[in-house]
Length: 113
Image (tube, rainbow, N blue to C red; front, side, top):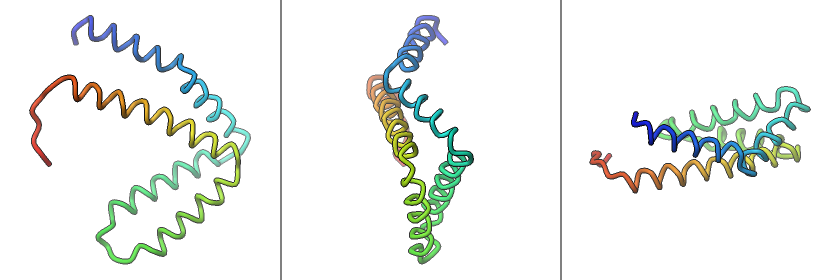
């Protein structure tokens, strides 16, 4: 990789890590440590959600969807979980916007899928 690109990428990474959004995310993630297993539950629910979306063609999903919704609702009763999910969404949005900006600024031909 070109040295200038690497240096600027490193500066961007450092700016993200030093941002108030990322610091808030880290704080919220650390707060989940007070609730053993909750972070793992969140990750497991995400895994199940992804699997659900990948299997959409396999018939009636209402029971599975309802079960996942109920699990999320139980976790969302913990204020720290809500704070974590909101902080995480902010970071994801920043990364998505940066990715879009880069992709739109640097033109390469890719097939339409």
